[in-house]
Image 1 (cartoon, rainbow, N blue to C red):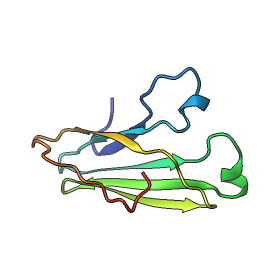
Image 2: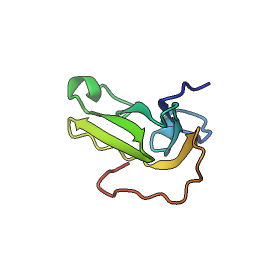
Image 3: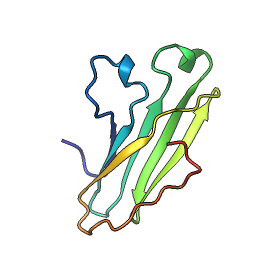
Image 4: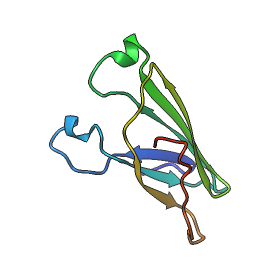
Length: 109
């Protein structure tokens, strides 16, 4: 179950350990509300140290979907640069056919 108006991020590849999933790509599941909008956030760190605490090395990315556009606003600190990519976006509740998708290359994800 996913609440309408929310955005959820998942790593979909089956692995034997979480250590092997560190650089796996994300699947973004966008569940639209009645107005066709949604929001969510993705927190990423190195998944192996306490650098998020000691050096504030992490990214907190706020995502929103409005007017048929998915936007991400990264807030990265401590010199942290995520190596993950978004592999797939799933829209739930969109009645119109998606005809094209473009990516702004200014973002690392």
